[in-house]
Length: 440
Ligand code: ADP
Ligand code: ASP
Ligand code: MG
Image (cartoon, rainbow, N blue to C red; front, side, top):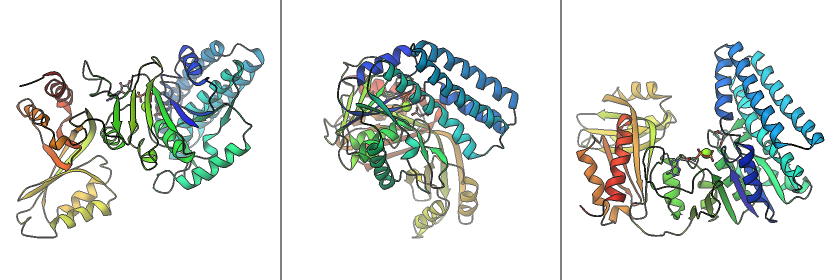
């Protein structure tokens, strides 16, 4: 069986839901994972933040605005009168729930319950729409099988056995529809896989059923060689290895949630990235094969903090790095990049929630400098460190100030740390040097 995931834009209008129907209705049994309609999760985040600030009136107004959009969608999507009644009632219930949240005392659980409404709405509506069109579809409620553990990682064993059970007890169907993004945590509370998490749901489900393939359908024809939001003339990459795709996703290629590749890499389940608006386009196939070497793609990750730790006696004093790493470990903070010299070590983190405590401990034996608003620009490809064209990237040194370079840590990744305000310029210039100019 295949798992097909459709993102926010793919279910963001009645026209696009019709496209999705034509893509999935090919007689093959499959599991379809859906995101919330585009804009909905952002609206729900906004509503939750208004409630947390105590702005009840503004929260209610936004809930009402969102409700009106859904009323319009239901009217356009569902023509059958009795089905329209069922769907309208469900939508009203979800919005009643949101209105009740305005009066609750705010907590993380309330916020997560608010955020879950987008996927609950899209899947219910789409399932009824398919049934109206004569498609044999059934809902698989994600909250009945998607589980994360104490450290917020998917509990793959529980997911596998719960999903087997849910599939056994759900009436036979051609198309099973489930919610991306949402899950229950180890306390049994509603939680989620972080923003963009429906991609992750798809590969988690794919691994749980040992799918023949996972397809991620979005609004672009696959992984491009640079970020199309900032660079013109980017091109789709036809093949990526799991390692290459994992690096690009982790280092900011928004088309994939950072963890998407992990659940399927071990079993070699291929992941295909496809465009709902242009189904014949090849897209990108992510598999265990390495096709070509050299720099294939560039991505950037924002929100990075750089920490320089200086000590007069760093190299003489063995155990120095161990001491540093232990402090990060004790504060549950992972390190992305690291460079060292005789007197200092610089490293980066993307989660600065424990930075205060980390600095306090580091300052007992060293001098600390912290730079915020940094970005990691990551160049990815098989064996790029050995490739004859890789030298071209160093032309970037004449355009921007590079704060750190990580070269050789892996043969497939070179990372540069820059000021975030130089990110767009850096991505554009690298595109020119690496993918446009043939020779220098
Ligand atoms: P969905 O809602 O379907 O999950 P996303 O918005 O999360 O879609 O991801 C698709 C978007 O990712 C594209 O529209 C594009 O703007 C952005 N993107 C960023 N980097 C890349 C890249 N390297 N290749 C393709 N798309 C990218
Ligand atoms: N709806 C969620 C979000 O917007 C999950 C997803 O779209 O993948 O982040
Ligand atoms: Mg996404």
